[in-house]
Amino acid sequence: ARGWELPESAATPEAAMLGRRTPSDGLGRRTALGGGLAGAMALGLAGRARAADAAPVAQNPATNPVFVAGRATTPEDDATSYNNFYEFGETKSISRAAQKLPLAPWTVSIDGLVESPMTLGLDDLERRMPLEQRVYRHRCVEAWAMTVPWTGFPLAELVKLAKPLSSAKFVTFTTAELPKVMPGLRQSFYPWPYTEGVTMAEATNPLPFLVTGLYGKPLPPQNGGPFRLALPWKYGFKSAKSIVRISFTDTEPHTFWE
Image 1 (cartoon, helix red, strand yellow):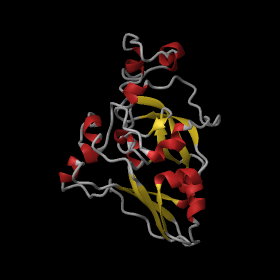
Image 2 (tube, helix red, strand yellow):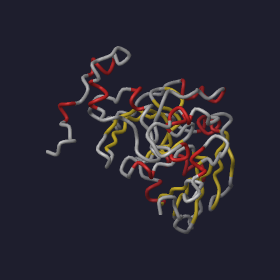
Image 3 (tube, one colour):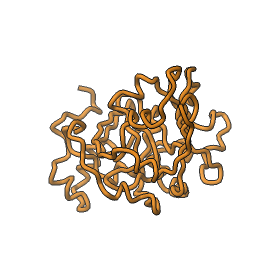
């Protein structure tokens, strides 16, 4: 085994995780290897709750038994303080800066090759979707790992709502671009806004998950709040954060990391 690898037996004990507000000699922190998601799977300090539109997440929907990680959950403090979110900076310590992101009101446009383009408030979108909780596991190529409970709904359900035309072959996600609160946008050599895409086959697969909550709370800004994508079989940076637009197209999108 390589020196940075941990065996499954090193998973945080359940008792330590459930009592995570009591110090446990750093066990959970070492086990999580820093915690957090790479690239677009950004995490950080407990974020401010969305105002009126936070109600659906507060209901704390049941965990889907199909999506369980088989190991202890990463401590919330780790998963919300070690983050990648280039709009706020290139280090993993962007959680404080991200608190300036306004989480409400938040709207999402659904357009392109669909029967009827629409713009919905996030609270309205949540009410239309079958909310559930899924525990997803993530291993980063940077040699750290995490396991967190997301709240949200399958991307496939949004595809059904959008009613794409038969000519649609790809789905493009465009994220927020707010220069007044996102200092990273000053890096002009990056192709802002941050965009990512999936094929229609990927979009309708059961795994892609549109996220509105984390640890039973509204999704904090440093984690990509208030609305992000989780693509558990791809590199973390493929999971777009703070999404404001979802477009259906017949041409392959040119994405940020290209």
